[in-house]
Image 1 (tube, chains in turn blue, red):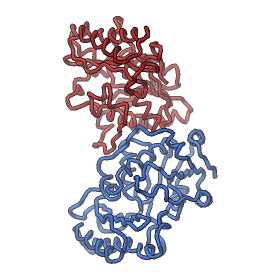
Image 2: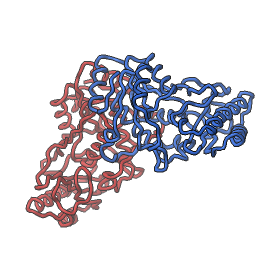
Image 3: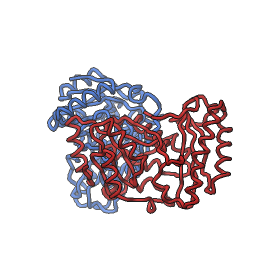
Image 4: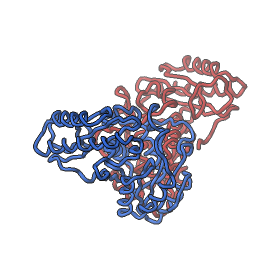
Length: 290
Length: 290
């Protein structure tokens, strides 16, 4: 596995691969890799000739009171795991390499960013759109892989690629979970033991909502209310939101008769956790978004 | 010369050229080609293996009260002239091809867009940034050519390419003028005979400003005042602005001791004309921006 830190080196290598007609799959990450990231890399490895992953904790997508400094980092372990998962090229730029001067360009999106996590993280998706546009231009991949745990991010990237005609295919893959159901997340290490035990109720609450839909509940309000109640009873953290929206357009729905996302976010002391279920109109899990 | 109207056809062809290691030069235009556009195409032809030009009157960059409907169009004449100027591929998409649905993505820029034409054309550069991003992704050129008549556009595209790491080299080429000095523009056809005769004072006014700088005038206010006076005395149209700013950052300067732009815009009855001089610190014309 090649580890590359400079943009010109990366461009040169990717240009060579392209001229060799290699199909390039790309997994952008913020590092501190877990099974969720690795599942994306393995899938990218199956579907492409060359797998590129990036590790970059993007300052632009963190708010002033968010956990940019505390975001966990472990480059050595990441490199070892990425290589085992089939990554051919690991791109690890510094912030100075990615942002040599303050950026004048502003990328935004109407819709899709003002709900769910976007509401409590103003500027977050603007930062995500900016860094992904930069990475897409540096890596020039054929396919790009994201985890559906960040389903709103997938919806936003879907609009980015579609509206701006990026020559890239988007693939969203299922959330990977711990044995007890907690969604794998780099931020889980910042939970106390008690919070870790409770945290499973994010998933249990969403599952209860899914069961209601499965049994025929068509009113989003009823589902959201039931899920919120379960979470309030079992979680000491503060619920940021429980929402049910169409997917990927992320609009409120009056009746559950289309693909929807049931999503929640909870603030614990030193971590904010998110989870969601992407469901078809029958309440069945949607396994792959592309 | 190939004429292509669909995005997938364009992508396929450009991908083939890239695999054949052809260097691609791109000249985006709104059509109604004149000597200004043709000079870009001829230069692109000298510097690249393949020259692509596009003709697309982009609705997104016109304000509600602007001349989108009246913008002159002549596809047949354009195709003939483009071919003579060495264009290999002419891309002419419809608005429905470029915007099959309303775009969710919003591109903006801090600085550079809130002065000169940006001030009187709110939303204009956002529309320019959006359509160019789309075209760059569809054409994937190595080099892109713009006329310095739209010097603010060149400054804005410079930030777009730089900040978002587009793998594209920007080239700005000199304004082409009529025999009497009027900058060539597709909009000149919308001038009355009297306006056409007067319009030369845009250039004459700017030239007077250049002479002042050349003779040692270092105060931008003095230059702007002198230029404005000459234009007011000789033009029946309404002056939109006369400004002197640093280039390409487009910031006010207190002393003329760096590369600057001296620019003006005038509203006539059915056309708004712009012109500028890009000057080095000695008041000499800058012939090429790259």
